[in-house]
Image (tube, rainbow, N blue to C red; front, side, top):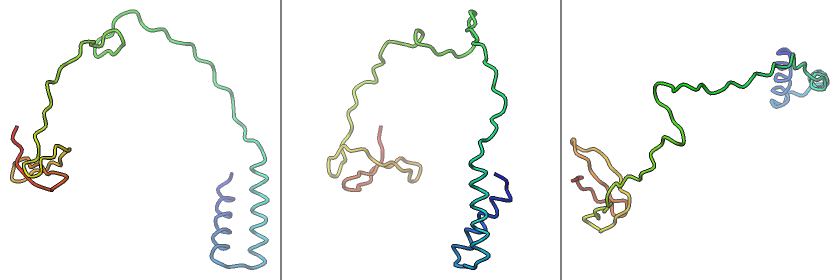
Length: 121
């Protein structure tokens, strides 16, 4: 669509929404709708078809740098140790805590009782 037609459509729509209803405005809005429907009814030229690209084979030499694949990934599981959360000193909850920094110290905040205490690893 041409930009002139788009601007005319927007102007007519804005005038109709603003409540300016006159015979000239209604006639122009009808003309714009007919012109837009005629443009939408015509198919656009899609241009020349693209050429089909040939598949590129994987090089047989090894590539320097990082390489990810299925066979070279580690298969041994790593044990992170037991995870024993320390309970809240006030209510004993072990829920996920909020953490914030106060005076260069990590402070833990209990989500149940809102108790604050200093993190000690």
